[in-house]
Image (cartoon, rainbow, N blue to C red; front, side, top):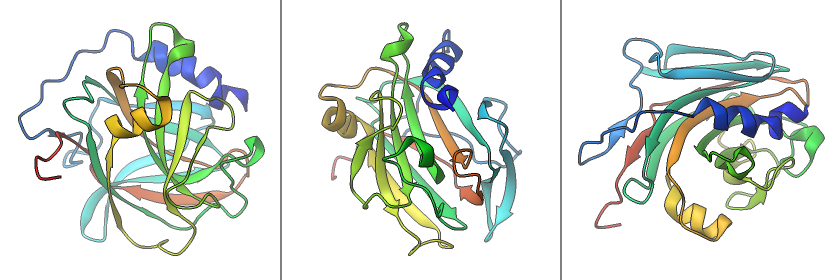
Length: 222
């Protein structure tokens, strides 16, 4: 559906107006440890129906569980911060399986078992950009393509295929360097971090789990 890819950026941009800047400790922050369930700062953005997002204990840890039944909605945590000072994101995730018919390069198959993304809002909604870190279905690990519906969102395959399905995988990305690589300039302020599992195009059903997301400064020894 067009609202999922094109009008989505209108919704995301308008929804991020007037955010309060986050104050970080020197070592960054954990967005939510899920100890008290979902933090109220999480907001669901529906693009095609509603996923089921909840905090569960999985494999001895508290995580967000996402269940998608031919639906697409994101769970967004709205925070303004400077990615030049805090460029690193870390998290762990696990998927039940990949989307059998999913393919990031085609509009009609633009579904993913799991993605974590960062939104860079603009007062001009058409300039809102995003980095999408995906568990790809067919796109090779390490490859990146523009979103099938908008060049303002890059789809970056951190994982790909079914090999690690059913396993927890730890991820660490540098959004400042990735923004420079894919958009050719320094990133503006980030406005939100989101998780999303979606199957509205393929009509499939899938489950995924997301551990806490950490926003961190760059390590001096990295």
